Length: 208
Image (tube, rainbow, N blue to C red):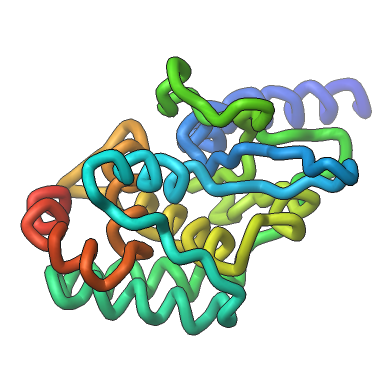
């Protein structure tokens, strides 16, 4: 009887795996950098990709340690200037996600995102997975050892925005299969005011 129950349990787990892992490979990623003193800090991919645009005359992303909540609110406000309805959906996902995230289970990890360009990366800062959302279980797994050592509160705020925006984009009518445009949007939302104004047209096109 116990063996029969175990078999039923294993079948149920195997059947659920494809839906539980709906965001596998496209979650929030970070570059894990080791400092000279041996300590580690993590830089969110979204912001690092945005920083690559400095050769085009863009300013570096202004990372600060202003409270995470304030920076998230500013990003949502910027988003609402372009598409209020979309921003409302993102804000709803933000509220849910911030109440439903947890550390990765002991003995498990989050694989590095597979939709990040492998041809270009910071030296001595390998890419790794920081967070991934499981739609079936409605939980955001976060590798807290990375989250607690992110380079700034801006990186943390941008991670929550990434997960919330990508959650919306995975639904109808967009049905996104990767987080490439989500990362572009996050980079714009956390840019300087001058660069944000410069990118308004681009942001509008990314939201369509």
